[in-house]
Image 1 (spheres, rainbow, N blue to C red):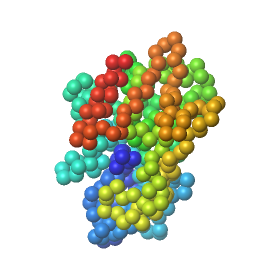
Image 2: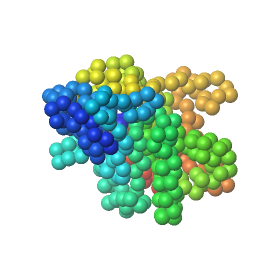
Image 3: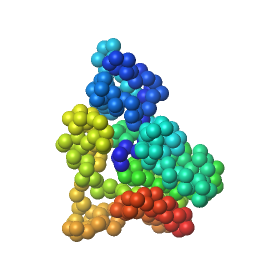
Image 4: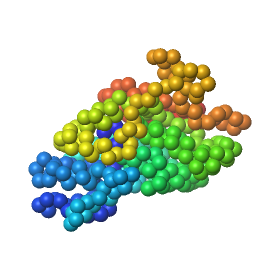
Length: 304
């Protein structure tokens, strides 16, 4: 699923029917066996486990059931394939092929010069930092990679990950550096070389409306009504809804009807040091050549 490109792992035990319990350390997003059990043993257990409680908390459980506590998996594996396993890994790949290309063709090394920044895609930007410290951890990870490589980083994001990147930069500027423009720009100059956006829903995504109104099963064996009940608990569902672009003067974005705003992404203004150019890749590339476009975009980014 395009908006759900990080594996989610459970860290508590949840009781389900007929011994189909969800154990600690068990992958829940995506778990082919648990999804099959929604049609054969327990139609609600997996959906309940994926659902959030009020204000992005873990969903409260009925007495004796136990509750799930899902958190994003770690490392490159968390974004390589969503459903690990000999029969499901190849069918649920997200960044696996791209990671292989970066390692074999451009000489990146996993865990040092090549790192993942997984996040719980169910949460809104505010909840991401409040609950998981997502932006603080990303800042530390980028700083460590840059310190080790002795050069600034290339940041690649896909789909909703692009909104995460922009929100991270907003958090960095207003929350971490408390509006200090000089410190913010210095951090970007030191740590970021280029940003590559793949299929970036910068003005929202029409598909998010379907999720909010009818439910979206993403091709999984979940009934639309159960999917709708689950997805309406996600803070992020409304984060992706389409939004208008102001067309009058004096606003940040300037566009006529039908135009794509040219100044929608502003990573940083130019100064005496290098700029951080955004490279926005079209989402309409050849589906039979899925990973050549992002690989070419990264190569372009590296030579700027």
